Picture 1 (cartoon, rainbow, N blue to C red):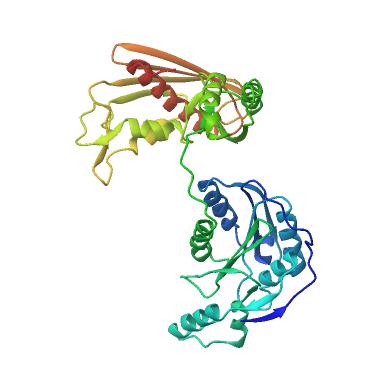
Picture 2 (cartoon, rainbow, N blue to C red; picture 1 turned 90 degrees about the horizontal axis):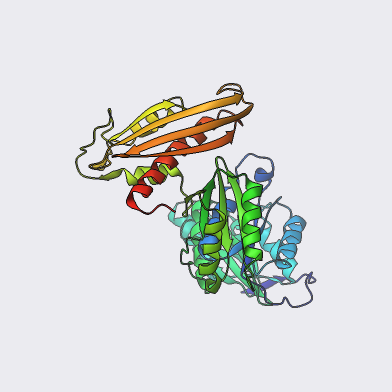
Length: 398
């Protein structure tokens, strides 16, 4: 290997250890022009989350050495891990390797194993090896290389002062498997699912946050935080806590959201209802056209719930929608105050009466008439009402 360049360091002081969080930087003029959607940043954050690493920040920068270098330096000031995706190709605008070296105050060295891999792949594809391809064998000094099984651009991992920078190529089929390999190389392991998520309905986002923030503040010694995301018609809550804290805090959140929790796994009411009324075997229900044993008089969703229900059966894999021995009768109504399903003003008072066997349960919800999506929200409300009625009859209702 030969050293090609050693710039003046931009980070003269060693970096101190940091919590396991990350900064994700995606590189490319085409991303900034809107020609390509930045799916890599989203998928990288999902992968990091699966490994128990929180994404502290995300940036998209141009194919510009200074812009990339500045972003890396800034990211290292915030995070334990900086992921840089893109700009590792053979052309003159692929400058990520040089920008990262500049940010870390490192030289550039050529790695023979990477060059041999580039030549083997191109020759195997009967593509002429161009002198500019040699750029793809150059990395910041001291890099741990990340082989690329699906392309010519190898990645790299560089460690400085207890923090890490990972360089990955841009094509998704190449960078995402390499990210997993890089995290494995850092000793990170996929996090065990804790179920510390809540999907709530019927409360506005500020009210959800206020209730949970108050509950967490009242917990002595707790250092947990919660994140909130509005996904109509739901408000999703994610709890960030140590393993020791989770049990007690989860109970506090359950209490704070009592009567409004649709699920604890991020799925919608329709998703859960589909699982509840779908099983393997011949359908024996009494529903009209669906075999579910579930019928609905619908004055609320304008047929959307029935349309969804009809789509549940039959399944290509032999799964058919069914409820079993007990039929379910639903009557859903809505009163539109000020507006209407086509005039989006005011609010709609939703009412759902669910009869399971001999027992009848009634649920109500007032929802802002925000737009056409209010009918999708009403469909979720009906599904949630059926789930609550079934839980009540099975003795599992909260």
